[in-house]
Amino acid sequence: MYRMKEFSAMTGLPQSKVRFYEKHGLVLSDRQENGYRVFTPEDAFRSNAFRTLLQYGFSIDEAVAMLDEKQGTEDFERSLLRQQEKLRREADLIAYRLRRLDSTLGAIKSEPGSGFELVDAADQVYINSSHGRDFRVSLENERTISQYYDLLSITSCARIIKKDDLLDNRPVVDPDYVMTMPEHESYRLDEQAQAQVKRLCLGKCIRFRRQATREESVRKETFADLFEYLESHGYRLRSDLMLFPSFLNLDGLGSDIETLYVPIS
Image (cartoon, rainbow, N blue to C red; front, side):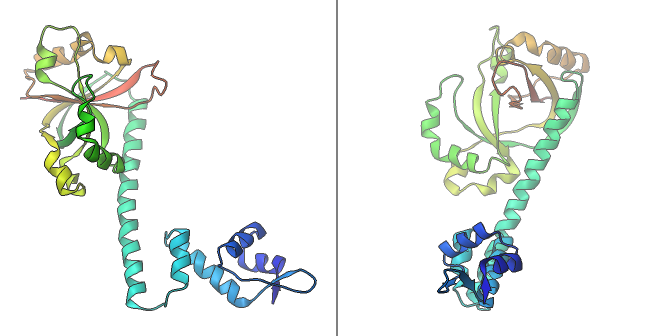
């Protein structure tokens, strides 16, 4: 039998954590006549088994339930296999997040507007949150938009600038606000969402970054460098543009670094 201090030292659990485990029925202490809590070696084994399940990524509630299940059964093995697949999916999402961070840090360190790059960009599947400044379509697309937000490591908040909108005589563009993801990742959406999304073929694109305030971002004069580059290299605008904001100006008052993909022919 172990007292609280001994049990805490032996298991590496702070006494507050031991009390937490008691509260959830993970360890069952007895009280001696003098009022001291005492624990058994089985309590130590149980607490370590519980922490091993937490190491596997199970939630507290899942780990508690599994402690009272029979071990070494097919059901128990299936629980481990399901958890393995879940962690692989999470690792995949973390890899995306790291790539996003790498890209954003690269954008911060580079000089926006300093260069244009010819790239083969992945086609995108997207769902509209707005048509221009009209956001009523988001009510029709609410379910699919929610799926995109659940996959936010892979999906992005973006804007689509219509080719015709960019080429007309008005001084500003009126972009659509969208949620988007690479087309090769669209298998993650359910059938209903896949039937609802639209596709933007990017392919051969000019990628460039610029720094602009929200007000400047829609002014056509801020696209002057792009049109000059296209003309000097003999490129023509093929279809709609996709703009990915970095949201680094969190208060909306400063400049943001925007990455634009411009399909060309």
